[in-house]
Length: 415
Image (tube, rainbow, N blue to C red; front, side, top):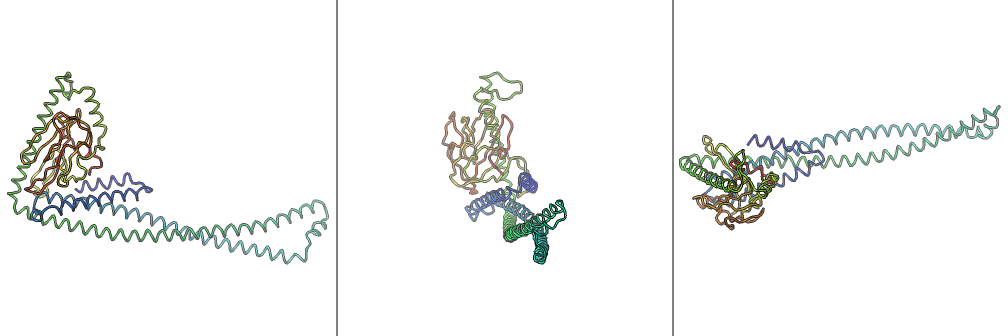
C-alpha cells in the first residue's frame, strides 16, 4: 500500500502544472470522496453480524486506502497553496517598495516643479522675455536665448506631465496592492480550511484503522475456520483458471483448424479477428468497466493476505465489489465463447475478442447465449450475492492467449 501511495503522489506531481493544479486536484478529490462514500454505503449494507467477515475487511481496506489518498491530495493542495501564498507575499513586498519609491519620486518632482514655478514668478517682473531676446548683442545670441526659453518652458511642462504620470501609476499600484492583500487573505483562509479538513481526514483514517484492527483481531481468533474458507476460495480459483485454460486451448485449436499454425505458437487469427484484437489492444487503459458502479477490493497478482499475513494468495484477475442485482456488461465487442458454472461462485461467461479473452465470474443470471456477438457495454447478466458472507462482487479477468493480464491497467481510470 505504501508503494502504491508513493507512486500515486509521484504521478500527481509529474503531471500537475501550476496553472491546472487546482482543477485537477479538485476533480481527484471529488472522485475519491465519491469512492469513500460508496465504500461506506457497502459497509453499511453489510449486516451487523457479518462485521467479522473477510469481505468486511476488504471494504474497510478499500476505504482506508481511499481516505489515505484523499489525505495525500490535501497535502499536495496545501503545499501548492503555500507556494502561492509565498509568491503573493513577495509580490506584495515588491509592490510596497515600488509604491514607496514612487511616492518619494513624486515628492522630489513636486519640489523641483515648485522651485521652477517660484523662480519663474520671481523673475517675471524683472525680466521681459521679448526684451531678453531683443537685447541680444548678436543674432546668434538672440537665437540661443530663444532656444533657452523654449527648453525652459518644455522642461516645466514635462515636469508637470511626469508628476501626473507618476501619480496615476501610484494609484494603479495601490489598487493592485489592495487586490493582492485581499487575495492573500482569501488564500490564508483556504489554508486554514485545508488544515481543518486534513485533521478531519486524518481522524477518519485513524477511526477506520482502529475498526479494521478490531475486525482483524476477531477474525484471527477464528483462524482455523477462515483458513478453510481461504483454501476453498483458492481451490475455486484454480478450478476457474483450469476451465479458462481449457476453453482458450479449444479456441486456439478451432482457430488453427481454419488457419495454418504460426511459428510463435500463438493464436492464428482471421483478418476480422485480427482487426478486433488490434482494436482491443489499442484501447488499453480505456476499456469501460464491466459494472456501472464498483470498487476494486482485490487486486491482480500475488499478495499477502490482509488478515493472515503468513498466507500468500494469487488473483488471476480483480474482484470488484458492487450493489446487489448490479448489471454486468461486456468491456468490448466480441463473441460469447463459453458459459459455465463454478460451484459456490455462480455462473461465468468468457468472451472472445480475437487474441484476447475477458472472463466475468460470479453471475446469478446470464442474459446471453453461446455464440452471440456482443457489443461493448452490452448486458451479459446480473451479479450474484453470496448469502453466506453477504458478498456481492464480480471476478473479472483478461487473458491474451495463455497470458493473464492485470485488468486494472486495461480499464479506464482504474485504481
